[in-house]
Structure formats: structure tokens, C-alpha cells
Length: 502
Image 1: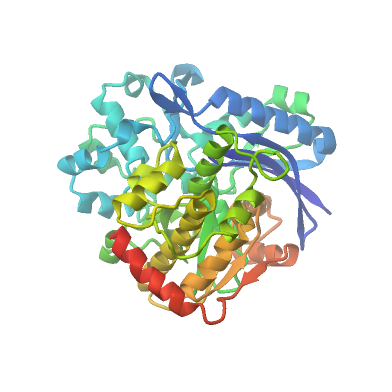
Image 2 (image 1 turned 45 degrees about the vertical axis):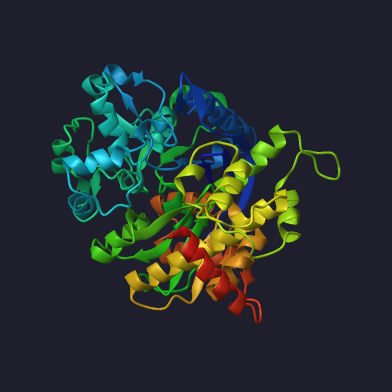
């Protein structure tokens, strides 16, 4: 009997409602609704437009209900990590959630290390150090005497917030909780002693809930209005990377890290899968993170600035009124064509340089970076794009070496999932730069993983091994082999790249 699961996959730049129709062996996807997302500036701060996003989620539910009605078995939401909102007495929402790109946490880590040494924070959380982690967001709220900390009764991360809006049930799903740097991956509980040292209240942090848990039915009014009368609300891996990695079509047994993954979207999350957390000096030195995966796995990975750089260039050029040959705003294929026509190996950037982290005139920032580092300044748009694509591929090469040292073995294959798979130039560059086989797909990896975890929760799929078999049965992957005789050119480029970024 065919079952239909609704995955609401919400990224930092867009969201989508995807129905996964599963017949027991294969899954077919149907995207029924898509909406834009992005931070909103108000009074010098960046926020997520929660009311607008909830309106979009509801509109998507109407679209799904109009076609599927009571045939939808369940619905689950995945989003990015670290950001959160509070509920107060009586379940009242306390304010709009901040965006992780808000500048209020700039420099927060340095102040945090004066309170608790870096080594101790890592020992308790095993997480990559980034200014915008939830720990530093909460620390800044404490420094600024935010009244929200005094009246908050529940912290809900972004996907938990939407599950609450859908079902009325409060939860803190495990995979997203592990992104906060307020969670101990070894004990699988909140790092209460660490938070206490920062003076951060912990009363609003209840035990976490596992992915695959059924929270209940849709709120009665919402179910009636949308026609989704049979749908349960089921927790997927609510962190989008947890869902994406769940959908990696690897055949390797669990705990054998002979493959790496890149979940390629606004961010590029690159790492290996492990049966348990790895909290040691090597992981700390490389500034990797231990994040919870579904079905008892751990994702040992590094956050890399991904398609954000290209997204910002496209945004700026379209705001400036640039057009393609057909007189239309620049699309992704237009950017790929500009990249392909530009001269290779001219200019490199560090994709994770701090100046690239905020919304700004990205093309000009890249030119400024090239000038500051004594390189050829890219004059054309294609040259800017070429610098981004090649630098990302070279950054992936560097992080691959770190993954191999952490995992203790050579990695033979890099699986790339997510919307960035459409950028075939980047995937080929990654194969060339790393000298490894790159497998692209599924493109909607996050939505697939979201839906398949709902199927696990329903008992229709046994575990991650069976889920990955379903992925292999369902989607055609694209493979990229290193181009013949390209290694010397990429080796020279890598040497230059390391000198520039170090």
C-alpha cells in the first residue's frame, strides 16, 4: 500500500513542501509549494520573519491538502540549526527569533573564553566554534539583561517552533539540539554545568525528543481547513543536515567512514558519519563538530560557507539590474555559463573569511579580498564566480584531509546531496581538486531524508541501512571522476590557496 509523507524543508534562503510517495521499495517526490526565506532587518538587527514563514507553511499545507487530503500520513519540518525562540506563560510566543547572521554575537566567543576556557567548552559540547552558536546568542542575551531570559518557560529551536504551531506540542528534537553548543553529545543531555558557569538559565531546557517520534495530530482547526485530517506530526531529523545525510546513498556499513558527505546548500556541511561522538584533540584542533544524526549516528563535520557566496553575488547583480541575453534577471544557469567562460586558477579566496559572512556587496568584497592578498583582482563577473567555485573545491580538499585524519582511513567517495548538486561545475571541480569520485544526488536530499525518517517513525522502514537502499532504488545519481591529467594543475592551485588562506 502506497503511503504519502509531507516533508517541509526550510532553508535559510527558501523552503518547499515535498510529498514523498512510498510504495515499500521506492519513493517518488512531488514538490507542491515553494516559498522564499531570508532575514529581515529591523532597527539594526536581523530577524527571521516568523509570521511570514508560518503563513507560507500554511499556504503550502492548503496546496498539499487540495491534492492529497487525508492520504497524507504525516508531516515533519526540518530547518537550519542554532536559532531559537521562547515561549512564555500560557504558551505565548516571546518575540521574533533572531537570525544567526545578526551582528550582536560578533566577538562573543572571545568574551566567552574569558569565562570558560575553550578547551572546557569543547570537552563538554564537542562542537565547532562559531560566533553564532546558540551558546553565544544566549550569553549575549545575558550580557544585555534581556528580560526574555527571566520570563521564558520553553526554548524552541526553529523546527520545534513549527512543530508546535502544527501540533500544539512542545518538543526539543535531538539532532537540532546538538547544534547549539549547549548540549553534551557524550551524555546526550544538555550541558547544564557549562550553562551555569555563564549564568544562563536552564529551566526552559527539557529533555530532548528523538527523531521519529509522533507528536500527535495536526491542530484540529488546521487539519479541517487544509483537509489533512489524517496527518500526524512526526519529528524527522529536524536539523536539515541530519535529514540530508540520512539520504546519502552509501552502501558502506555504519561506522566505516570510507566516504564523506557534503550537504551543499547555503552552507556546505562536510564530514563523516560515526557510530559515536569523537571528542578529542584532533577534532578540536580542526574545529570540527559532533552533531547528532538519526538512528543513533553522529555527524562529525565542518561548516563551510557554501552556495551563500554565489547567492549573494546573484542577489547583488539582480538588484543592480543586470540581465542575461534574453533580457531576464540572472538565473543559476546564467551564473554557471559565466563561470565556465572565465579563465581558471587566477584568484582564490577563503570562503570562510569573516567579511563574507554577512549580507553585503559580495562581488566587491571578493575583489577587495583579492587586492588585500596581493592577487589579480577579478574584473568580470565570471572571474568573481570562478574564484568562488575553485576556492570552494579547494576548501573541500583541505577538509577532506581532515576527515581522513579523524576517521583514520582514506576516503574513496564524496557524496554530495542538496540543491547545490545542480552546480555541476562545482562538483567536477571538487572531483578534480580532491582526486576522488564525487557522487551527486539526490538533489532534494534533505526532503527525502525528512520523509524517510517519518517512514521509520511509522514502522514502514526499519533503519538507516534500509532507508539508503530506498534512496538508491529511487534516484539516479550523477558521478564525477577527476579529469585526466588535471592533478598537477590542481596541486599547484592548492599550494597557492593554502598560502593565501593561511
